[in-house]
Length: 114
Image (tube, rainbow, N blue to C red):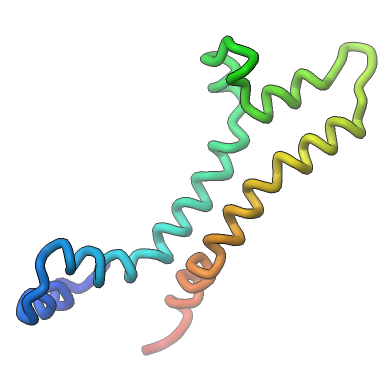
């Protein structure tokens, strides 16, 4: 919760509503937004059933659907499966690395007193 006194003091200093939002509200909520983005990105990236039901085109298949096609009834190339899964985890790791400083800042903000 962001104190109303911050936006009131900015109004007294002559800030517009847009400036209050971009200069005060957004910087204070970056850790929370980064946490929500990370936590919600992983299930969306790994979703299997929703795209399986809705996507009919082979060109539009997601990574989990394409990985499922690598499993055969009698034979499976596990080297190929693990290579595809390793490559599929890279966007999630890059996304976390980009937002990790905000994520850690949000975790430690509640631990410090003052």
